[in-house]
Length: 297
Image (cartoon, rainbow, N blue to C red; front, side):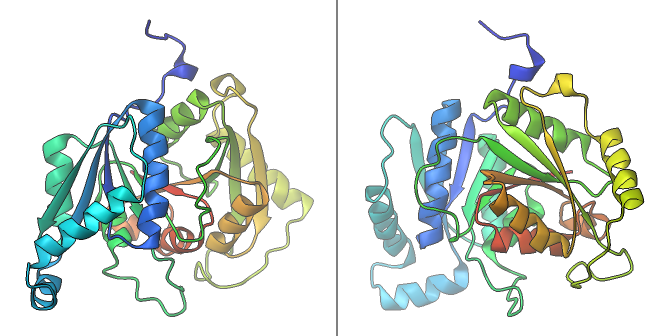
């Protein structure tokens, strides 16, 4: 029977693409992909892309060639995980990462992409061109990123989501998707607003004083954005803090024991107008100790 309760209608997640590079972060991502596949009865496309430049090196090192080498690594990767009861298939392609993945996503109607990150240090950067960034910046469907800082154990469930709101804008479609996911899992929202001087860069370590008037004004703005209590299966929390946005988001997620951080992002062609600045989003993705779900606006 199909439920007519809007609180119980979860998002459609029937086809998941797990992007792997056979690193430890890929194993972390596989744990989350498997959990989502079990939760929604979804099919998995476990995908590895051999870059053309790397292909020449691999072909020289491995006489069998880059593709054959990738197939051997894929076999070892599959053997290291449990896929019992999950319909899945492997895909190995050669080419540039995003065009290859975009083709697979479109051809198979992928609902969710899961990928590991390497948790690069923000100060040393090396950000542009990273696999996770390319995927998040270009994907139209939701992307779940998992860093090496995420515990390797299988989560007990999705019980608490941290959702940053800037107090002025919000992506209604992203919020609706997250609410459906949270309500289906009886999860709690922690809505977070970080006070940060708008004239300062998003990574400038200023500390704004939160007096009673500023707190009340911020709370009033959030209550205008956050849906009414009848839309939630569990009462949400609202947290207002001062600090560097990305660092505060990561810290609050750790402190509240969040199972996921949810952030709306604009795609590559319009990053300059992002509701959540891309610099903040990438810093959260790189440093979070729980999975980060990005939703394209």
